[in-house]
Image (cartoon, rainbow, N blue to C red; front, side, top):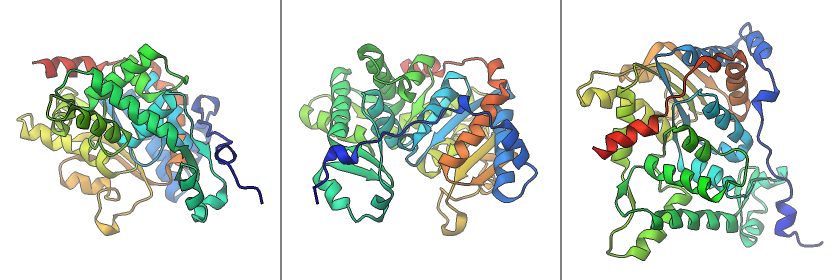
Length: 352
């Protein structure tokens, strides 16, 4: 049998779903009259659309899990373009290893179903191919992404930065050097002045690039990431919005970080700034006490989320997200929503 090459494995790229091409409003409205997760999903779609219609509401999009490699990138780019989101809180992997990687001209690839058994992972290791369930990435291309982060850090004045500030520089890099794809979360957020926070920024390709930067600088001045500054900036964003809503995919650090600003505002003397709306899409449940599966009603006990407009949707994201966001997109209420350009405000606050 002929030995497979890297090209054999990396033959078919992932294609990102385009919600503009699929009007799911009748389907989602029909699901309202069903039961179980179908009815939950329909109500979640209505809550997202309600957030968009609420002119007093700032919307936070939370991204956890591997979503961009799975084909959801254009959904989130369209949310930014259409003013359906005012801030993003994400894992670093979605923003750097996946979105920024593709903006540099690289792709994610469809893996054969049999790879999910793990029987060929040693072969993938030999060929420098990384696997995320049934999706494949070229490790050599990831190393280029890592090094690009190092180059960006090397060019910045040495001081502590929030992850938001660093990601702005990533967007500026793509603007200057040319984005190699038509859709990029990092670039679109840069152009629309939408803040992106990655509270665990070093837990991704950014970490590899930043340790290379810091190691080369030795004892000299260097760029570092201040996660407390992240927390302060998003809290200041929350204080300046009359109402807020959360649209959360997955859980983990992005979910907790975005919820915690409701309490942080109170600690800074502005009273409890509870989130008025909240939707979470997850496959986790509450039985182990972990944050990812904790219900939004539980979050209410902490003063983080109101319970009038909250909905848990127990579904895998690639199924639920196109339906929920597609519903809000085709309802069209985003057309009456103003762009808010929050990066400018946060930069002004940081400069004081």
